[in-house]
Amino acid sequence: MQSPVPLNALLAILPEIILCVSACALFVMEPFIPKEKRDIMAYFSLVALTLSGLSLILLCGKNISAFNGMIVVDQYALVFKTLLLGASILTILISFQYIKIERIHLGEYYGLILFATIGMMLLPAATDLLSIYLSLELMSMSFYILAAFMRKDAKSIEAGIKYFLAGIFTSGLILYGIAFLYGITGTTHLGAIRATLASQSAPSILANPILFFALVLLITGFGFKIAAVPFHMWAPDVYEGAPTPVTALLSVGSKLATFSAMLRVFVFGLVVNANDWQQLLWVIAALTMTLGNVAALVQTNFKRLLAYSSIAHAGYLLMGLLAKSESGMAAVITHAVAYLFMTLGAFTMIILVCKEGSRGDQISDLKGLGQVYPMVGIAFILFALSLIGIPPTAGFVGKLLLFGAAIDGQFYWLAVIGVLNSAISLYYYFKVATVMFMEDPPDDIRPSFSMPLKVGLLVMAVTTVAIGLYPEPLIRTAFSSIRVLF
Image 1 (spheres, rainbow, N blue to C red):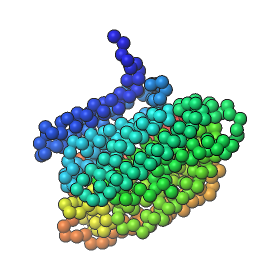
Image 2 (image 1 turned 90 degrees about the horizontal axis):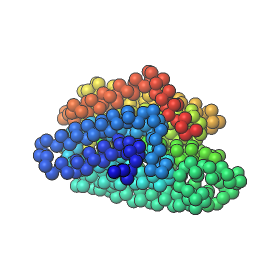
Image 3 (image 1 turned 180 degrees about the vertical axis):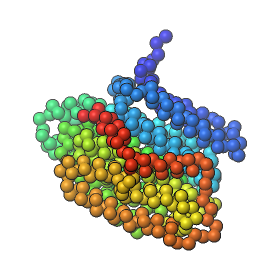
Image 4 (image 1 turned 180 degrees about the horizontal axis):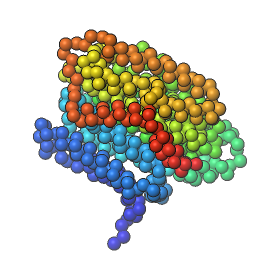
């Protein structure tokens, strides 16, 4: 009997199938596991993510087009899938102790992380506007619930509602943009859209008001998802209110997955009319870097500070997209890897000082942490140096490539703005470091260590330095993976 779905298509989504079955199993398992043994669910999730990662090996070297071209598994998709799986694994590692303290040690927590990971992993493989939209929705719906997962915490409920309202508004904008683009080209497939636009005689998007409107809607929709200025308003409140591991995954996974889709849309699908969207994204990138860094200067809440830092990094990543070149795209992937480890590491500092009755998200909660636990303080210094872009860290490599790509693309002033903003960030990151090392610790300072968190923190710190010292393999992989877009 012939399978209704070709085996080739099932192989293309095998990593996602593994996660989907595992997530459903977690929802079923949870009622039968005693509260004191719920760590089993965390380890089960880690095994599921690991198996999903191992299944990617079967796809290496292949170029599979499935579901009528809506999903393509190529080296570009595999690189981002691996990156996003790593983000989810590290998120679960740093969640062990935190969710016990916040009393949200439930199977649904892990199940929703797996469903969010499925949506994130499908985005870099999506080559049709509809598959991009559906993947975004799967990812976003999981995060709506996770943001409000601490149902007895007013800030968490507020975060969930705000993110939900911003998300559904964003989804509507993207869907309208897709509808207009379909009306003009008669297709939603990125390759066919590219071919149709190339055959049209109009030299500019501005010559076609409907096409221009579709472009604005798509940029606005994606801008909300990556928290770019002026579409960033939801981010600080949501980042502050959501559970800290969820905030970390939202800051890293959601942003990088959305960028992976944006690269396909703007570099592959709309590259014919690139000069028009470049002008708009230039302004957005400059505003995003500047507002993110300037607003972070006055923050006393560490999660809000990292929220504005995340906004600023969206601006840096947009520089690579603007370059519209192999070097620009490779720079985005390289900085995305660096951003993952250094940002998750910074959020781990908040988890360490979280305790009963205190969320640990104020900068003052980190007083003396570096004095009492020097290795933790050194780890934060590494993450801070990387976020600023100082050698020998991964962040330096990523920013160097991004600024170089901007200069190669003749975006000289944007590169200057990026360098100046990196200098601004030096102040607020080392303001936190000063609190950690120079102020006296409270008598009751007891970080929430667990063995999985120690493993995760060690991996993040070592990788941040390792990439900075020897970036060549990562850069080579980034360049080879993006060639499929050209």
